[in-house]
Length: 153
Image (cartoon, rainbow, N blue to C red; front, side, top):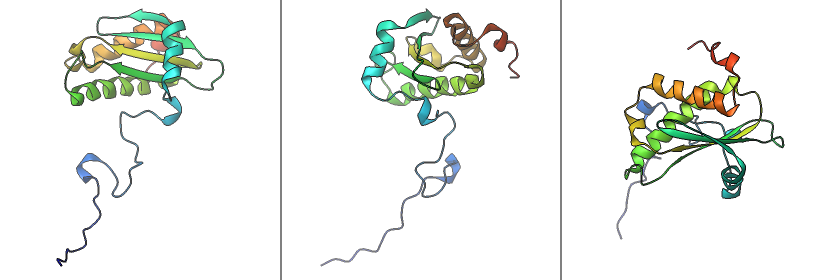
């Protein structure tokens, strides 16, 4: 019979900014649970009845949802865009972070689906992505045009 020493609990690396032993630490780039879609049927409703605005790198499909208090957002990146899951997740995190920065300007409850169709999103500058997202949100009626010029960043 062999004896093994008890192992210390595994914790997340401190260099990543996570707290030791806590899985629910809020990471930069994540949106709160209240702003996420839950279940496929919710997305299906937006795909069927939502309006679309296309840009150079991604499309925004949205529809107002009067049954909710806040907006919900999903970022869809197909495996056809990039084979690597790491790269697809990086694309998602970049767009979620931009939506999080624009959150104060979203005044009405909307269901928003951002569909990426160019892998050039990985090389695009943050300023370029933010300006495209603002323009598409304005075209879709998600944010007002007067709120765009008042952003401090």
